[in-house]
Image 1 (cartoon, rainbow, N blue to C red):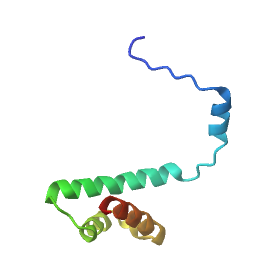
Image 2 (cartoon, rainbow, N blue to C red; image 1 turned 180 degrees about the vertical axis):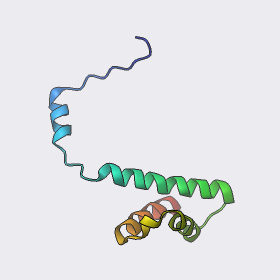
Image 3 (cartoon, one colour; image 1 turned 60 degrees about the horizontal axis):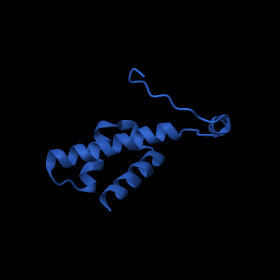
Image 4 (cartoon, rainbow, N blue to C red; image 1 turned 90 degrees about the vertical axis):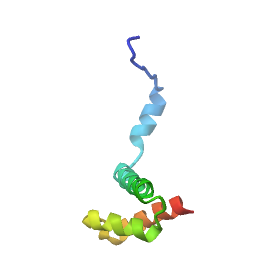
Length: 83
């Protein structure tokens, strides 16, 4: 098949997916992925990196992350990683 993957999705599933209200789901997903990348990079760079240091680095390089909602999301990812 020339290396192409073809996936068949039933019409009912397609309609259900399109009816979902995802809102800013993907934006939050990307943000959490970025935070996780920072955590992994910090651990790779320093060997051991505490939660406060990861937050410090992230906030220094991402000024828009200073909103209360963004801080809540960042802390939730950091807590999950360090638990």
